[in-house]
Image (tube, rainbow, N blue to C red; front, side, top):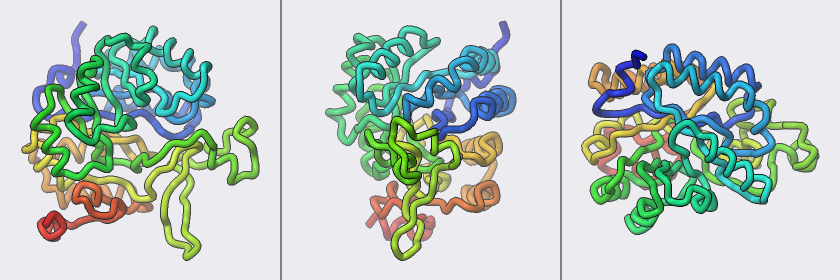
Length: 314
């Protein structure tokens, strides 16, 4: 069987993270079909990472989606929940591990015992703040790891220098900040979590949260809290590559993720200047302000212009 040349591509790799939001099943299916046919991604992560109640909606389409992505030469990872809170969810994660067509991406360290040391990936929901934490996870069988989105560039560079496995950085999308056992969407609609009626489906990019001064602040996605702003590390791709990072994660939003990948690829391969790419990206996501503050150890919601970067780092 012929494979897409992207499956054997050397150099920088683009990774599509799992869909964080509760999109209709047919929307998710068609989204991944288009990614398979047109998206310039090397790896695609599938699976529900936010709320286990959403898992059954996509189960019937999953085998066909996996097959189509793999036929297109894409590496497929199954992602676990980011908060495994009861025996039912533990059982579901054991079943996911048993049926996974390739590597499992761990987003809750409570899943590690079920893997019994077999090779796996670490997702951005597992905290890696120093080399000891990274070394521990490698010792448990991790063969690649996506770092937390809030890490500053200097720490990313240190970890990349010391790491024995490939590291990945979250470079695009609303940033996942917290996960809770309580459902914010349900409470906002005066419902209980058990009777939520899937209130989160009304907000395909998360529901904006505003301060009492009516300023945009965060976004809620069921039990998950996200940034209001959209991470955009287009300007930081070159220094990340210089630091040794070769994998770059884009998190799905309702905009054009095929065109988004093309812009990141053009910058990674030096066909397009980062500034021009950011401008074009703004046309794809006109209602989402961009941010890269975490990279510069600045407030995460800020967008640090390249001319100011040296001052902020100092």
